[in-house]
Image: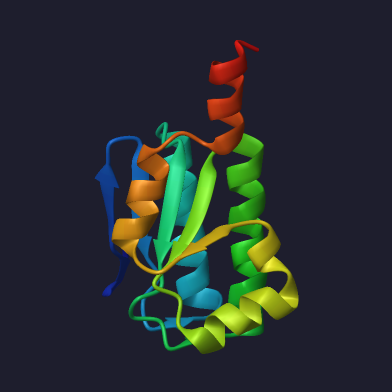
Length: 131
């Protein structure tokens, strides 16, 4: 967990997956904290990130821009990225701005972790065909 002053980003590890809790408002300050925590987790060996938006009521334009940076960092490190517990308004925003093309969005954290526990379709195909 990263703590700056009285503000912190909650996170936890589940195997090689980090779950990061976005908080109630994703703006410049909170977004930068989320981004730093995601990058810290990737540098420590995480192969997947779940950003949980359960408590998030609003994501502003700077927050969206910062999330694009997280998407880029995850892609560069070869990690999977899932957004969970996204409300309808925020999901529509992510869809409209193109973020949904780069991440998986799940109903909740449990579904996100379950999807990470099963192999990706392309990995399954490679195993089945021996390639």
